[in-house]
Length: 491
Image: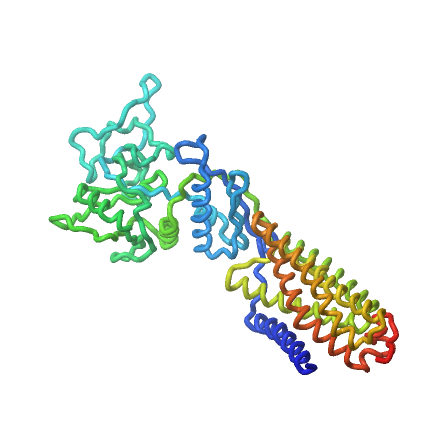
């Protein structure tokens, strides 16, 4: 039996130290969160495109959060906090280097539509004060063609606002520098095909050495694309992205007869690798079902986070040292068990948090540090419950040897009940909360589980071994008997 206790102590010690050594050798450390590492936090108000006063449905909010999560994960942001709060969407991105690019990708609606090009139009020229603004649906002048004809009568027609760029309408919108139209605009027909028809997209070098975006279509989108392309054979199809024409390729200009695209195609234009990658990322993870309007944007300084971390750690270490000194003074040799046990728990926590940070993107923020500091009290309480139970046993006339055997089984029920209450509270906080509170709940719950494991595999067998060793129990100043404040009777 003694051998079994010794093995339990050795194994639990080796596991904790080996775990810590492993992550240190791998140069892993806990991944710091937004408030410790620095980053950006944005609150967005979701609105229905073209109908800003309509209420956004919970399903649209949930879909938007899911798409933003996918986009942010593709950017390589470790453990972002993204959720809804009072109808708004809160996005927290720790450790982001290019914050402007990240926000552009997060908030881009990526409203993609494939539209037939009816004709080109000059840049907008406001009519003279004596003239009225033209009304009605604009149309191409007689004699112009979609393959490069410019209809001058459209100059006085204003460009369609982005909020009115919807699939069912004919629009007059600006081309980007990569669309090939310069300062000209495009008159486009209704869009029979939207970005939802795209299955996947990726940036790639084209045959002419330029960058573009290759995409594949869904099974439902492929025949619709072939229908549109067939109708526009030798004519242009505009790629309308967020109210601008990014490209307007001519459909199979070098072929005499139309052939199916077989579910794939490419978007070409004046792309760089960066712009092509950004477009591919937006298309790959879908168009947002709503338009996001930034409400507040907060940049968190990494320096401020480091100061907060140092202050929190200083408070935690000071409190821990005072607790350790008191435990040694009050419980003598048993106090040393507390010191070693807390050290092994800290080593195991460091290893687990580091591994989860690199494998699952877990981040340690200030609320998590607070949870870990609070958990020290819970762990020390477990030791106190056990030791006080031993004192009761000794006061009842039992020897230290018999007390350590029976005392733990009775104390463990109390330890388990207390830890269970803490774990349930942490679990409920994790389920019903968002953001920083979830970090507090997670690390509190993790520490509580480790406390139960440590109590059974380390504290119990080590105290039993000490209680069976007369040298340890009867030592003059540090003995277990001195800590239990009792004299042995026949030990």
